[in-house]
Length: 181
Ligand code: SF4
Image (cartoon, rainbow, N blue to C red; front, top):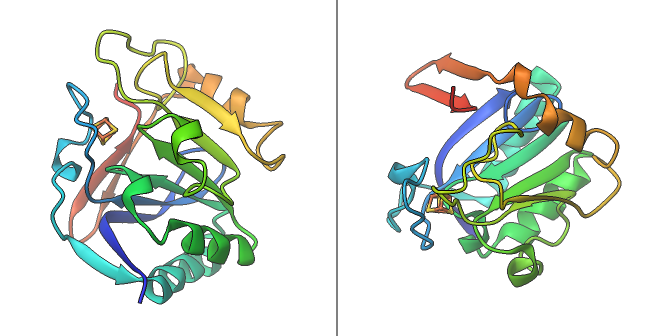
C-alpha cells in the first residue's frame, strides 16, 4: 500500500502559494543545504506515516471546510515520496491544483513530479539569498509552470514581497509558516 512520511500538515494556509492551500511538509531530505530553513524535517526517520486514502481524506475535508484551491508540497524533500504521482493524480481528481517545492533541479525529478501544475526548484544557497520574491529562499530557485493553471498569477504572487507574512496556527501544536521576516 502506498504510504507517505509526513512531518506536518496545515489544512488552510495563504502563505504557501496563490489562493487558499493545504500544505503538506514531508519528512526527510538528503540534500543537506547549509542553513536549511526546516532542519527538523531533514532526518530520514518515520514521523506520521499516512496512506494515500488518509491523505486524500484530509485534503477532501479541507476543500469542504475551507474552500482550498490547491495543495502545496514542501518539506523535507517531496520527491523522496515514491507515491507522489498517485497523490498528485488524486488531488487533481478533486479539482485542486498542485504546487511542489523541490531542492533538486526539476529536470532531475520531473517524473515523480508529473501532474504538478507548478514546481519551485533548486537547493537553498545560503550565500545567494532571495531578496525580491516571497517564500523562495535563494535567488537560484526557479518558478516553473508545468500547466496553465497558475500561469497568469504565480509570478505576481511571488513578487508581492511587500505582502511578506507569517501565519501562526494554534491547535494541538503551534506551527508557523510563510516568509522569513
Ligand atoms: S532542500 Fe530544503 S529541506 Fe532539504 S536541506 Fe535544502 S532547504 Fe532543507
